[in-house]
Image (tube, rainbow, N blue to C red; front, side, top):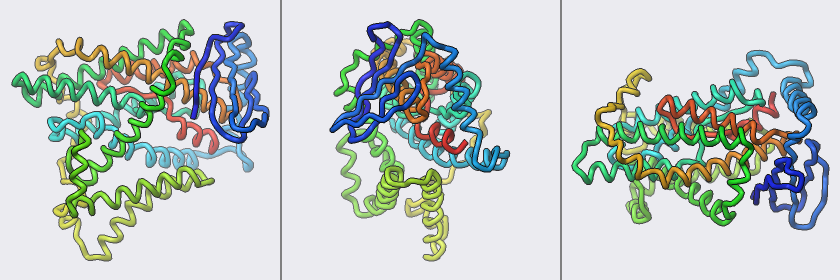
Length: 404
């Protein structure tokens, strides 16, 4: 568990210090990883090498070159397509889950298919931003979990206030799809300024128990959203877990919970990067194989709640017709400012940890402020296209780096 970020060293060079527990670790100094044994705690100090940009640029170039070389030579287009497919397999199911978290208020359910596609489209914009502006040509960036709870809190607050005042679902959707992207774009501007003026030490004032509790709550929120998808019921409060007392709904949730446990074990124990995406393909394939062997048709499975209700396809061009600026309640922007400020701190801190983790896995120094500006630009772009907050996806970035 990463413990702290501190950019206020005695030389003012903008060092970032991260602590994690473990019996072994390393000391990264000036971009080089060196083993250093300690009993219970390993301190990892990562230099941004702000005062030696030539050396830092050489490290990044070396990392990029290693990312393209293999024992047998250079990868061809087929290999890149395979890695892209694996990243899509890993990312897309999570993005649909994120959409369920952000739009978990019942008023959004009639439009959840379109709203889910907006989250996926937002991730495309994020990835385009990282492709164009990141110093890491293997970087992966999408909508991520750090801002989910804040986005969900704002969308629920907007929906409840509009409906309480006699508003319509169309007003709820239009207002939400304007205020949340505005908050995302504003967050991007703040991150750009933080990186431009090297002010990332601001986020170090967040107490670690607060960060730890928030990250734990994200996990709970995602678990709740996953169970809600399995049983086809909205779950927003603790009391909603009573749905699992119904035998049929518990049966519907069981395969999802077992699959989640299996994927958790695989992600922690597997030594081959291909195992996790392979498992994510095998699990749904096994489900349909069981249906086939049991002689259960897709229509019967849908009637019993095993497959989601069939909905007409939603063209991307129709998604943005959900927004009618004449229906937007602009006064609710003020009510979301407090939640937005909290989101700025958490997303900034989480992005710092992602960048630090990527740097330590590479064994090379990264300029955190520069990479944070990249995160800011991608969020600005996403917000301008009605998207939501995102950042580097550490696990997928490292996967792509290791495989070329």
